[in-house]
Length: 199
Image 1: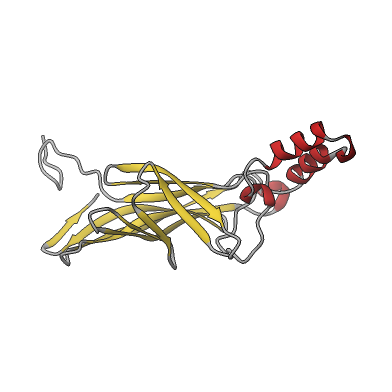
Image 2: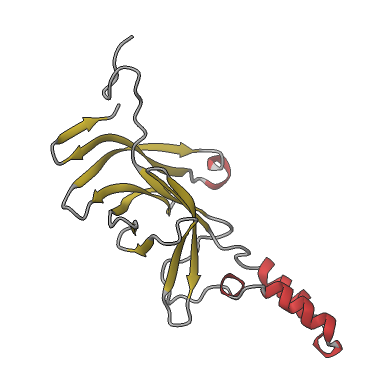
């Protein structure tokens, strides 16, 4: 048996990613752009249903709400994270003061911030994880890969990636356009005392 870059009988699970699943149309990362009310108001549809059932003077509130949802972006995008043994969902809340609050589940005590470009997660032990290497489908960013780790003691790890492109030609004959996706493949991990090539 031939040894890999990390040793005979060993495999390397490296890096991490924050992934966005676009549901309907892409949600804006700009908190100053108004979001559909059902993305920000809990139980929007249920509230309209209950109001319509309890008061005959509020006819069609539920139907109008359903029409409003059906004609627009019906669901908020979903966000997930996975890195170094941690994984879960990211809850995004659009606040009335035109900011976006972010919270990780189940790792609620970790801090997450939107930065340009990407995200920063700070774990309970003070280690900082930067997700700034982007992957996209069409014109939408769909993933932010782990690009750097910083420890409170000054240690530091960087992840290098190569681009892989793919083309979707299924609609080319009818539209004249084809979809392009850019994905990422980890190629190297740099740390304070050297590096590990990843093939």
